[in-house]
Length: 584
Image (cartoon, rainbow, N blue to C red; front, side, top):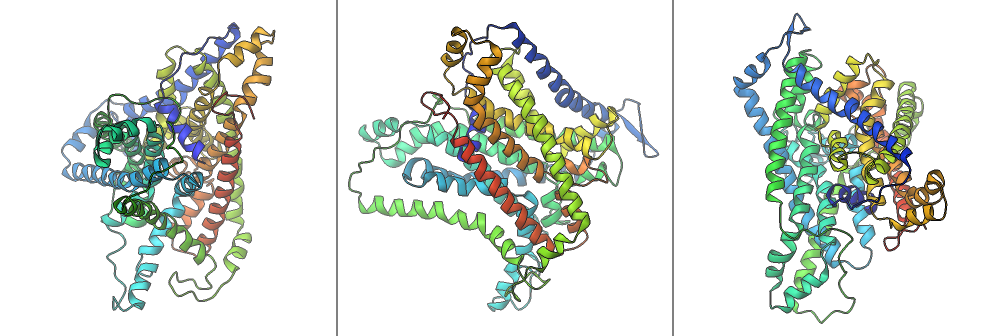
């Protein structure tokens, strides 16, 4: 699992090596699909969003009359400006807290731990790929008036009656956002810290620098870009989220994503909703630009990981032993924060009571039996599988072809298109859902499975592309040259040399893409219409009240995601070795 995460991050941060152009002109045809994908799924949808924001509505219909009325309305709306600032501040604060929690964890895993490192890393990253709905719902179950926290406080005598102060507040949104942010921050920070050669640390210590001075002048400057990337990943994940505020925020925790969604739903004012979305994108872009500017540093390291510390260790002083023990605690405590909500939900799926509170009323499997008899849920599961396999097939084929086109110079300005194709990943979920609605509406694509496949492919394909590109850049370019010098043609070189070398990354990226597709809510909700996937079906059920079977659904989804993650990780570890790029 560590390879999945770090390779995706590395693909966006490593400098593009100079690739040797292939000798066959047929490879030049690979550039045109890249251009077509960029125009159809990136450029046109975003231009439509901007264009729609300059239109106006009349009697519930869009009037093609250019106007800045929506922007003037936003400019004069103090409530919108306050809500925008609160959304940006909450997401930024959660990203900062996520980085503060993740940094010591990442440092301990990258620079201190020698045995079991991969297990510790996987345990941090696993919650990232478990259903967002599941994680958010777990916190609602903990913080609710009849939730686990209130039950504990009342039973222990600390409170006389359940409190309403824990749920449906701005703090509950911040807490859940922080929980979501930690794995994203950990991925980027760990990748940066692991690449710092230990020789630099030793040189600083040999020069007489203290541990703090070494960290301040060596470790922190070289890891600062990773912190900025971690902040960006966490910030983008939460700034356009409307699922979390809806479930744990209530009125007091309203964020701008909820307002945007309502404009394309109940209010049916697409120009105004588009204007809000544009303002959110611009504001988020400015925040990220400032953070990335702060994250700049001289002497950024590129390439493979730095040298590991030597196995022999000098005797530690009492102060060093105390510091090491503190570091171990700082690394271990966040695990409780990450896994306690998931463990509680799984436990509650066997509770024989419809009230989610401790103590348990007994153990039962009836909620799982109830799921097997729910035809609507089973239909949603079948639809999720159809959508997921279709999205993975389209995205994997496209990502593989695009990776070769970009890596081997068959695309003009390859670095630009690499980032341009990844733009949907950087767009807040609510905004991406809207732009895909506009694009599919213009193309007269019916709602349901066709729209959902297109919308999900727009962000699944770039993720698979980054994984494959990261693996391609680790290959020895002499392999392809040797194959062609031996008389192999383009197809033979691809089948017998290139594809076996990247097969693990392709399959691993495809499985990763399937988990993203199966878990998506924010984009799919706009596109599914009356044909909901499983996450949308669960979301609709939760809006009309709690049923204990939801715990059973999330438990099954979590176990399924975990199995896919383990299989994906195994496939990637069986990929080419870092040293010679040969297939295993």
